[in-house]
Image (cartoon, rainbow, N blue to C red; front, top):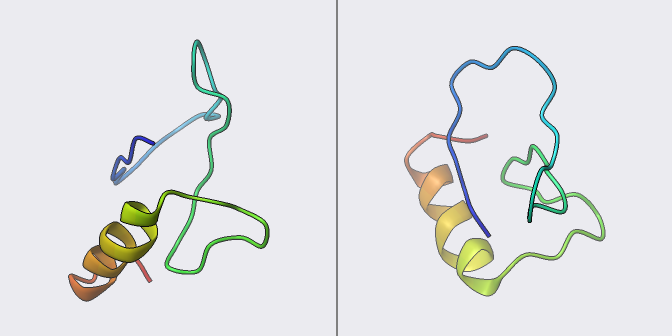
Length: 54
């Protein structure tokens, strides 16, 4: 899973090549979305602690 912080974006995000899905998420993942444990237990909490996501 790749993670990017985007400040401003114009246009539509669409998956391409080997990317199956693109999603905008905050600290609460959408129901049914499964992510890797590192993302769930390390990346999201880090971003939240540093006020980079809600």
